[in-house]
Image (cartoon, rainbow, N blue to C red):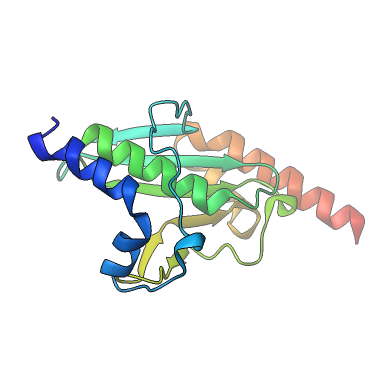
Amino acid sequence: MSLPYDATTKELIETDPAGWVAFLGCTVPPAAVGMIEADLSTVTTDADKVIRVDVPYRWLLHLDIQAGTSASIERRLLRYNALLHARHGVPVASVVVLLRRSANIAWLNGCLSVAPPVGPAWEFRYQVIRVWERSASEFLNGPLGLVPTGAARRRERFRTAERH
């Protein structure tokens, strides 16, 4: 819902964006500040899989499955997490599942740290599952939906052994 002062304030921000940056404690040359399009309605994206969990309270489990590397994975996880939270209004847990060693990125550690020049630093936390580091029996003896992952894990381990 738009409040009466929203439009006016938004217009004033556009007239002096550097003033707002300075107001928030970061003095930069005015030429180093500019406006960008703020409309997010064009975001058309789908998270890999989202599971609703209703106990002990309602929350969402966002699973992002990766078979290859992606340098933007953390930003994508954050975007999906924030969009899901905004849409459903419940906590969201994000998990990236790396299916193969070739999908591994050494710096992927479950924490995206952000330290903007104004305001507090913050972190986005997520879980990383490296399938090849898990026991095949965790998948093969677990719920039916995990069995194919265990088979993929065994195949990946076999391929790695063949290379060495």
